[in-house]
Image (tube, rainbow, N blue to C red):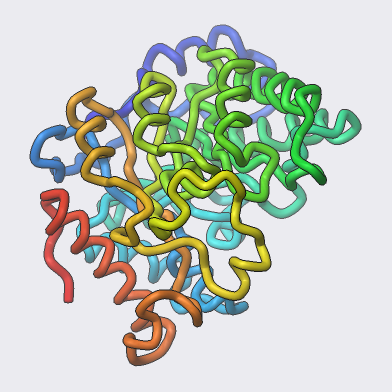
Length: 353
């Protein structure tokens, strides 16, 4: 597998220049390349890797249960031909103090632990309030050192907390960006690229806020997790944004929405989302995935393009047409999105019924 970042250089820098961090853990920096080799799936660019986040089974029906536990999910994803998983907090909590046990599950299944989103138990995700920022930085550095590093992650996708009432001021965006710079300087010393994820209802929601964050952050320390659905729902053109910031894009989240939200001047509300999801499986019409993959192929993107699709919930388009329990509905959502990549974009994934 071709890794999307130079681990060897950065991990040597970690050993030389981050002695204090290394001294605080008995772990040795992970090897430069992951041991798992993945078969190219894209017909044009062999360096695009395909996976999913855990949201597709952890948020099934917005319920309090999951139809797949972590071990089952790893096997399910591998069986369907995908190459990795990015977990949210609830999927990894049992492994917080034993990351190598989790890595073994992935190695045995032949897929990659991509990374884990922030928001773990006890972890601050406040990037704006001055009294919370030191804890936010310390918590994220510790998580990278103690969990992501032994799992050989090359980037760290993060959300940035709640949206300030009325939207962020420029001073708040400056503080957020300064926090990202300070944090990213420490994570890159471990070979891990800090990758903020603009998210509706978060402090970086609208396109101008995302562009201001990118302007204020140092490319040496801060990258971008480009979520096609959230960028569109925030009023932006996801394809143009990926093209504009291509050298800093660490990962693509493949999420769709409805065509009516293209070019919106006002983000749909959380109340609207509670009534009926504003997200959609691929093919909803909000995102031009053909154009997106042209950019990823023409400019030779090296990294992960992964589903970040919420689990089935009442009110979704097509939900009532799916029979069975939550597990069967999740399987149907997975199949739909895999078949979209296969049939529309030519990705060499096995067809699923």
